[in-house]
Figure 1 (tube, helix red, strand yellow):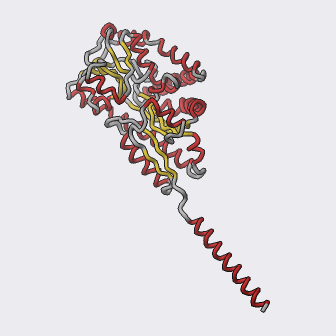
Figure 2 (tube, helix red, strand yellow; figure 1 turned 60 degrees about the horizontal axis):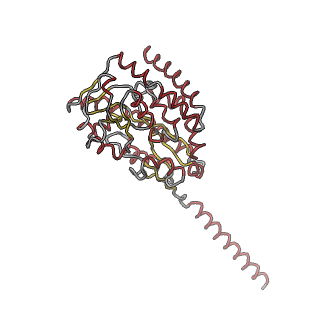
Figure 3 (cartoon, rainbow, N blue to C red; figure 1 turned 90 degrees about the vertical axis):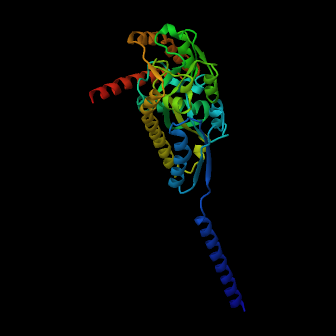
Length: 353
């Protein structure tokens, strides 16, 4: 009897072990919990951004992570001015955001708006990757608890108005919607009025004559209809050739990401920014030709007037440095010096080729 009892007990233990192992195996084979991120982006007409970040990048991340990371990128989920704070507070996990809208509280991100720094559309992506990235990432972490994961931009930044501006005297009395504080300051220095209007209200402001024009990229200017009310493309250096944007992620959300996914996600986001920069730059020439056919006129000031405007707008640079220091990023001066040294060599290399 005892032998049978022992045998039964042993059998019961074996069965329990088998069941436990089976359950454990089943749990280990279960699909990992899906992580869901929501990023914000703004409406940008026919720029590459909305389709690329809204459809292509989420698909790439889903495939590369085996479905473990789902990315939603709605348009205008948050007002532009609330995006950094929304990411900081974890309301959203990240964003594709333009930097000029935060120039008042985060000036280091707006170095591209300093007149005369960026001359061509390819310069911002190059210098941001080579020089600015670690400075911007460090500042974002310190101020907002945000990580920089990609560099983006909107190319072909120009001044559009309902009148031709051929000389500096013709700036007087003109009301222009800039993309940030430094645009408005630049206009002030040449005698115009810089008017702050939210992006989602910019079209109505131009249409209704609240402003006489605006600063934006050629593709948005054409595809969103601004050209109907501001037909003059005035080629003054009130802003660099590109407007900076970035792909950012809440630091807590980033740290919570499984370690095996971090390098995959970082690579995809960084490459996505680079790809979108190239895509946006590639649209500028065609937009310009299309606008000419629609009756828009390109106004180019004389070289003398152009250089004089840069001299008049020189205080913008000094104000940017001052505000960066006051905002707790004194390293901005060093960053700008490195950027300009890099660009000198970059341009020289292009000339040689």
